[in-house]
Length: 184
Image 1: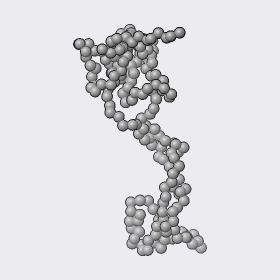
Image 2 (image 1 turned 90 degrees about the horizontal axis):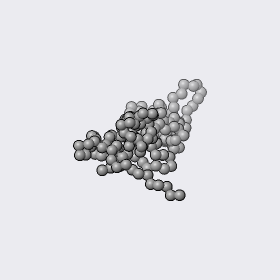
Image 3 (image 1 turned 60 degrees about the vertical axis):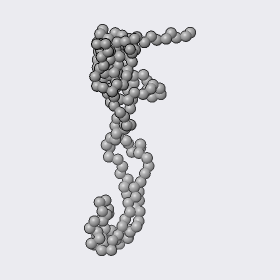
Image 4 (image 1 turned 135 degrees about the horizontal axis):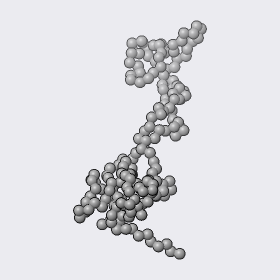
């Protein structure tokens, strides 16, 4: 037997039957009529939702169970499966981009192989159409980190620890949990 309101993780996707009776319901957030499940309502109340004549079962689909404490009160949902980081949340970092040069135009065909590069002439000078301006050779130079200062793409990333999924069930008929008397 179990206590009314007790929740168990079970390795099957149906409500178990004991002695021909259903004692368990899936924790799927379903609304129940208070008049039909008075014992369960006496234990969990409106903690998981509902109002007036109905109350909700806890909804544990896609959720992990955690203990109460700082940051999470009994029955409170916290956390997100995905989160989009802001620039302020990304640690300071840089991506070096190194200039290169080749000695003939034929070497430029696949340079740099499969990566982004800066367009250059084969004699290692930058393209420049301004009369009287000479460019400076850059071979082997690490470019400024500010060169690639753009960060992020505003796309969410998965924020979930590895899990093994079970269905959660709540007992609606069983032994009634009696609250202990408070000592004076």
